[in-house]
Image 1 (cartoon, rainbow, N blue to C red):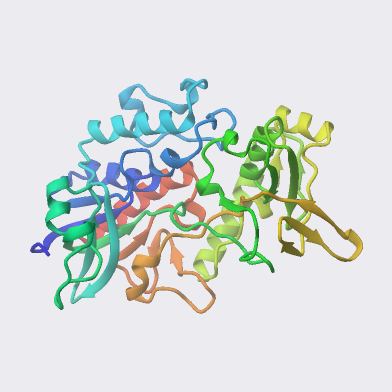
Image 2: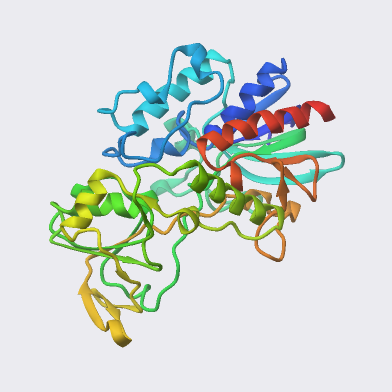
Length: 391
């Protein structure tokens, strides 16, 4: 393990929230790789967007708001090419943003732990950059097996590093922590389980009987993409779909969603679903899908049995399933913060104005009410100001 560095601020994550914080730190004349360091687990720029499926377009996805300072580059998502995959557009724009503001993001770096180290915090991370073939061979014995001694682990590990910091900004989002609820028979399912984070192309499911689980825009998008591909298509949701007769969430609905998230974060509770509190704005494409009977969700099934899902009681019946797509959302990716014991008994972390109330050295950008692109941008300014006031 290399000797630890020491900086004023470490930012974990280079998605919309992390980049927003870094932008304002630069505005306060902090220098990347000198005053602050950005660590990102992904192989390239783009945050979680780089992992989304290729058919997703900006015009059909949640609105992506511009990062602060993006106008200096002459860029805006409002005028981006709608014919290109959203993942490609966001990755390109974020890459230009990082270069323009000299953010020097270190990637791919996986933060394993953040621990207390006196007045500082110690960030322990590993470099996921593929090792040269020669180094891999040197670490292994005959037949490709790693040489073992009593002093080294049985499996090869990535290069380990440490960095000490006065303040930590966690901006890891949720993509790395997919959520799948448990239902009886899941382990014995004869088909394939797929989460939103695993979905890459509708063609992967051609001529399959697919069950899509979820009541949000991802589930709806999967239904529309799979309509002409799957041999059979069933949509189920744990709650009735609250369709809104407008194409975008209005200010009142957005404000209500933010208020719900903020109240939960301040009380240390697990964060609620955005969709459950706002409903789903009905685009023209969705309205057409409802009209032709595609976008009509059945209640959640009771169990999985072999190659089918089963309903009991008054909704009794079954549907064949070769694949179950779980569009059931994500949870905040906070496992690396576990040693700090920030989590409350209610299931969440108590956060107000972006700061962890139990430890003033720690900020959570993009958490709770800051999860949207516009919320993340505002949070960046707020968090950077608080850090500068304490430096």
